[in-house]
Length: 173
Image (spheres, rainbow, N blue to C red):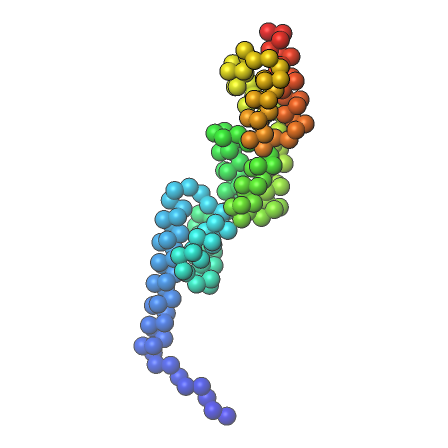
């Protein structure tokens, strides 16, 4: 039985150096990518793949980012939801879709979005539009408000209830 040929020590060192420098390059690229905003692990993985990093190196990088608390899908999903609800409110359905597009796990998406109330969000959004719609008759009021809320991802039922409620408030007051 023949033994496999032994590698020379300098060859082993070169391979280790190449692996370490590749990992460091990948980490540097990930830090750069994360410098703009938080990202999901799926986004980081996809971005590193597009940059040509080997899968093993990308996975080691993501593991290192997790250790440094720079990659946490639950925290990312919570950040995304809070940001959306504060600055660009959308329906629960659209927020779920956006998180899915960001490669966040379905369980995490459900956990983060379970407390979103579409009725409340739609009412707040529509109330902000009320001054610009106050001069319209009901069909035009409903059409414009419905298209605005539909664009934000709200269901027909939510739109109908919100428009009806706001119309009644407008008429009373």
